Image 1 (cartoon, rainbow, N blue to C red):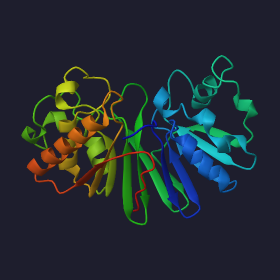
Image 2: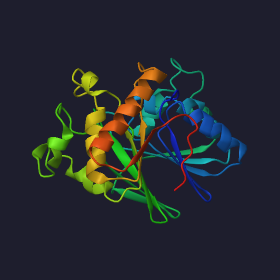
Image 3: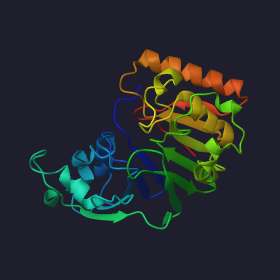
Image 4: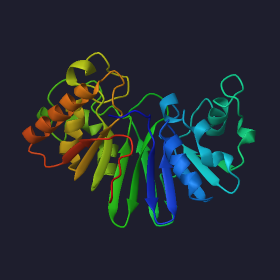
Length: 268
């Protein structure tokens, strides 16, 4: 399961919006390049390597006529254009940003939402080291949320079912919970088993149990688990998925859960 690092494409009519530029954006770029020049929007959750490393291999960036608007959370050390340009430094890559023939624009996220055609994209802070956000996409009354890196209930090792809604450990996530209210499809990580998480607190990723606690609180119709641990085999992931379903059943939660994988298509 898995394989590439993070990239999500949302298509509505002629509107194409990409989220994160991990290695998966290479395949997305090949398909987009074959379909002809257009305007694209690329929203970055954060600029850690696994979320931007595919951009130098994004074919539309090299094709005249493409317009690519890149949006990312504000980083106190470097602006997003400098970060993207930095990975194209001659010490790392044979092609520089000035060799890219598409029109590129870079902007920090600002007022909390953007309207692109009929699609509304909004964002909220994620619990992850550095400047990191998560996104919600709304179109035609449907809501899809994308939380690839988020340490929900950071540091909690108990049973999330034991936490009342007004518990202070949940209250610190109130902004996220309100943001996710009414979400139909949630893409959210659950990178660690509960046993693994005890040694990974503060790394910016959720345990299976704590992520299931989030699902109990917001009740989406579907949950797609992403950001699989690179040390987990396919067998490990299947075991973790079975465990996730078992926990949700124990919570009385009807959310359908599956694992994200390369090439997955979901219709809203």
